[in-house]
Image (cartoon, rainbow, N blue to C red; front, side, top):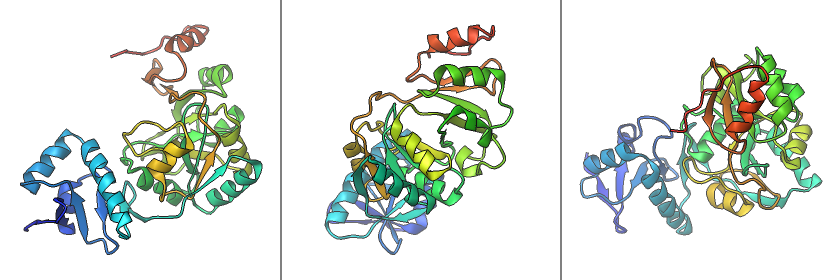
Length: 308
């Protein structure tokens, strides 16, 4: 099938070739016109050979270039779809409101109806959906262009609500929750059956934390349910710490951004997997590894952590 080169030096590849260049949903960026008939890649002399080569190196370059081309097309009046982990999504109007009590009430209503809301936390800005609405959580994958094999963490209002989403909650889990929650420690625990598979990426575990910030805590309370939430950026890009950065990344793909000013932490949470023996640090972040080691030492539990 012959590819056509646009006047702006971009290669337009017929949609029939989409599966070849995007074998895993979310593994590359694909921009469709309103009829879903085309995909746009950066200009290539040999599109088949070079597209395969670029994807082999990773999707980040394609993602950055396509984001710029998407903005150009939108300025020209094109109606675009974004193809992410869950499928195509039409753009929506994104509102930015101060994180007031009234705005949090409006945000809770949006979440209850299956919408997406971004909000400040003690670490970075997050984008969230009702944790028990699979279709809403699917939209996070689309908005972020997030690979479907990456699970989405859950935010709770308090540690006592762990039983809503996790099973086999050990004494160690309760000890760490008491020591570090609310705060920047995410615990990986066995998932409760009521948690949708899309949240856990089909796996048997769930990542959970209680944030130390009034906005998400008030939002969870107003919604009356946990939030499935992750950083409010395009997948693979830096985590945002301001509402303006969120709007740049996800504007047009989420309904509301709660502006609570700059996030005080600016660093993602530390992730600790308690389903392994010994517990394993999966990501170093807001909570220092030494602090976790000290807490676990009270139970004479070793920690699996390799700086490399």
